Image (cartoon, rainbow, N blue to C red):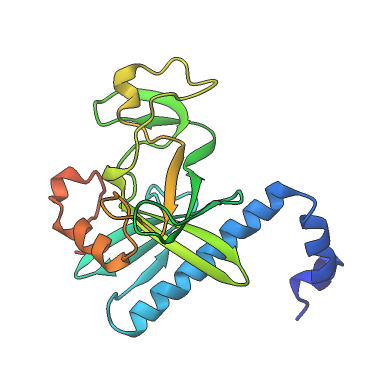
Length: 222
């Protein structure tokens, strides 16, 4: 069977050489590999019996997020994002003297879409309404095959205050229902942060939340 490189008539070395000159392609590839690496973490948890099912959420699905897992009888959706630009490295901080990497992950659509907000308003926006997935997993690649990851509940993510060009028609009330398109991330998660380094901790937080507060259909497994 012909592999993809043979089909395209290019070698892996040639592809990498060309991609290195195109930051947007490198960012896309980094995000794709990050999702693969995260799925490896989930597969290890499934093998240990911690989670039961891992499902890829189709791009056109009404469900949001990249992956859905079944944990303690509940379905939890996870959005996976990778810091696309080179993160800032800080060592010897006032927090604990450790090394931290700071950057931003982008949460928005490529084009405007009609979205119905929790207050009943319908808006046309690239921004992501809050509550459409349960957990955000933010990853950073440190080179040499090393990846680090932190997690945050959707309801703890920053809401938008400056929606940007093309979003000027949004009211201040509507913005409170929309996520900030660039979420600031510190990896590993520092103390007293809304982020955590522990996936199981954030999964437990999800299922401990009142289901009525999570606008997600089919939250409990039938």
